[in-house]
Image (cartoon, rainbow, N blue to C red; front, top):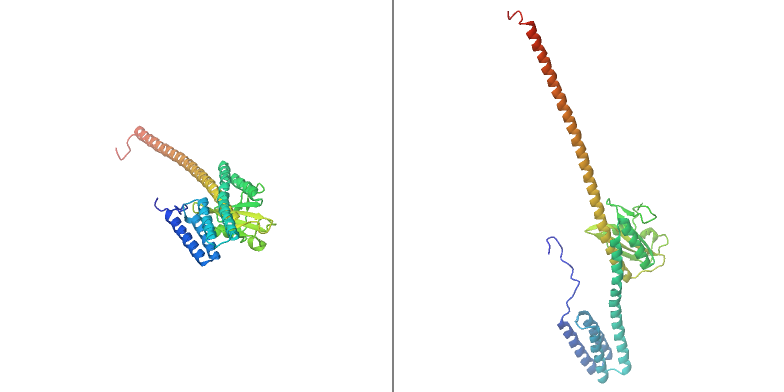
Length: 321
């Protein structure tokens, strides 16, 4: 690990064998206790808990865990703890839980192609304004809501890029959601917009989601989603929006750095030109000064030569005689 770099957050968990053994032991003990004590409610709670525990920390797939728990329910029927109606209800509940888990897993997988296409489009942008325009169009199509991206001007201010009405618009400091998230970072969601508090950019907004754009340890802007329907967004939508905001922030950061490099290079080139011009001007003045000095010396030598000539022609003076 490089010096000065924080440790990466562990996103992957290694599934181990012993947690699965533990939950199987809990299942066996629970089935025996529930059957002996004739407590179907207790047995249902045990079977459901074991099913969730096996899927969370165990290394076996959903189908294997479902078969184990279903076998425990059938064992309880044979032991006389459950009747067939209770067993059928329990099996239905297990299938619903398994289906929900599989749906959640597959829904995440279904999002991956959309994330990939969105990132690819951002990479094709040639300018910072194009990045903002692509993000606004794509997220707007995904959500069916109004999208606004405000970027930092480098002087603690925010502005809407030229994609909005084909001109740059500087935002006033109104204390709204955008300015709060620009200062603090994070995300915000409300299903009931308060116009004087949230200060949405869309006048008809009733629901709002906003995420601060951060990259490279810098706050670079805010992206905001506004809908004219109350309670239009869910917590799952907020999580997806935060992922999309991450892609936007990385693309914006790259182009901001490119613009900063170009501006620094132009400033350096301009300074070099000014320096060269100053050197040329100074050199020219030095050459003229040297030339004038040489001319002055030549004139002095000429005057001295004329004086010597006159002295030679007139001869020595009276004092010399």
